[in-house]
Image 1 (spheres, one colour):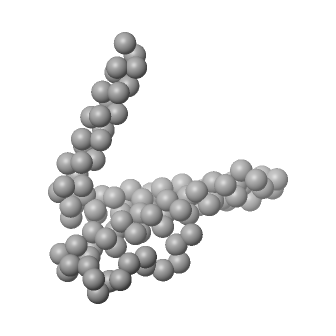
Image 2 (cartoon, rainbow, N blue to C red):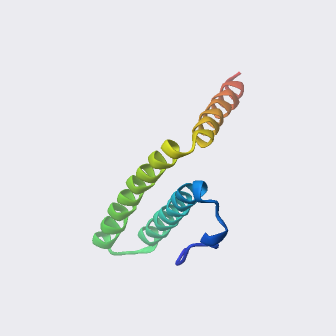
Length: 97
């Protein structure tokens, strides 16, 4: 689990700092989602399971918020995300044939 920024901020170029912080935030949210979903899977208490899964859903919203901001700040990331989507669609189309 992430508990501190995993890079030396002083070594990041000023124009890249916000993008790097957003990526760290996304990693932290994904880590939290995994944790809460794992805890929900092992608890026997249905009320606790419901709370863990609700919080995991909130973390997924946070991923969306941070990703939206990252795509606004990093045009290359936006293009590569679209390229990745196209590659997956192509792979799946080839599987169907």
